[in-house]
Length: 110
Ligand code: 5GP
Ligand code: ZN
Image (cartoon, helix red, strand yellow):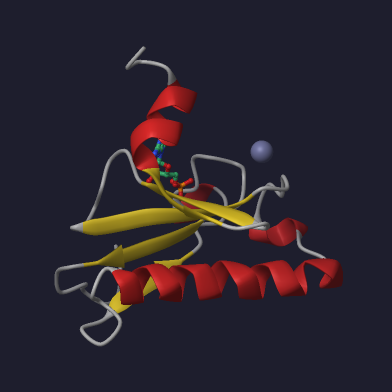
């Protein structure tokens, strides 16, 4: 069932997982590496964090850095970012940390 979202994630898009997060490849990659670090627990946006989420946010960044290291981008360079709400372009309202690498990433972003 190649059209089934969950089959795609389980069979192909899952790059890593731990007790707090899963890491999947973005379906519409904006760089040679474009992954999403997603907490298992539902949090809609960065605006919805509480102090109790501090450890989770650390775990998300460590998962991103681990992925970049595994893919060979730790020293070359990579970018991590959260889009929050409309003007930043957030389209999926379950928190996710983008990890981009593999080409020169311009600054400032669009
Ligand atoms: P946002 O725009 O909310 O910051 O990021 C959402 C990301 O999720 C986008 O980069 C988009 O390409 C990705 N995305 C949307 N639907 C799917 C999907 O079904 N599977 C995967 N792997 N990525 C998705
Ligand atoms: Zn959710």
